[in-house]
Image (cartoon, rainbow, N blue to C red):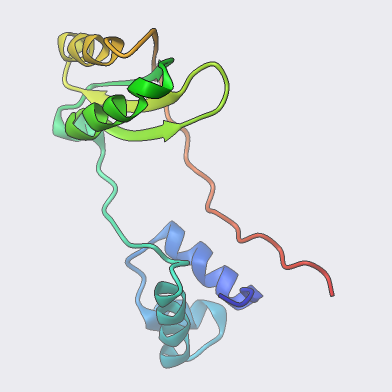
Length: 151
């Protein structure tokens, strides 16, 4: 997609703050008509800049009281199997493949410590794991598109 101008960037920031804003409200906030704002949003959706919309669920409100980050150090031969297991484990909510000593980092939400233990043990068959309990999550900053190179 061609570079995003400041209006596109403002629209992205607004949608990251509240994905339920209407085209009319976004247009009002950025100084465009509703059709013009909606056309920009559609263009960014079609280009893959806006990848989707979703509800953000409070884990504690649905009984998932323990959150942990699990780091796994494994071999290249075991990597695919470990990622497959993580994909099949409902408690694993995201997986990152990383460089460094660890190979994979899993974000895990569990109902209790016993369930966390089972998740850790299932991943540990692929190599050493390190587990850290999450005490608090701080708000994420919205993504800001990379600046276009100067002409």
